Image (cartoon, rainbow, N blue to C red; front, side, top):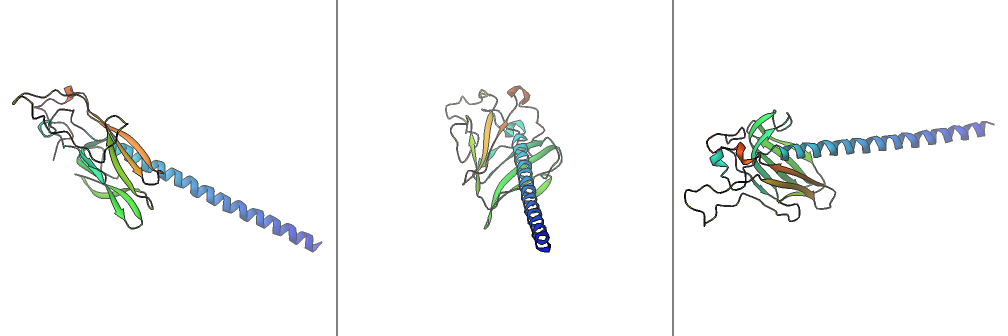
Length: 201
């Protein structure tokens, strides 16, 4: 009788231990998913906050910080929609987002005119890089506004159009793939004589 009772207790403890381990594993997985979602939301928000000059316009002439991007990051003028790790809501001046390579993997940092560089995304042990596209089909490792045409009429203003630039952050193993849109407003919002809130500092 004692033997049967002992075996029953052992069975109960074994089931309980397995349930606890399963519960902890599920909890860790749920926290990992939540952290990943927060990281993705932060990065998307930073890309959306960029203030691009319209295509064919000179960013500096409009009082904007010129945008430039490469595989290891991008920089440009930004207006943050909400307070976060990169600074308070509102004009941030020059926003710089960079991939920082570490021996154990990559992290992404951001810095602005009002906030020193801080880690906003930890992708260790993965390695990530940025890419850029105007159409979502062909991607480039780097992007900057094209120089003025050598055939432009001196003194004439080039035609301007709203600019939509897709920014992508992807990992070598395909587990990270974040695509978000950065854009200018309609060209009418950027008169040559009036600065924009995202103007250069």
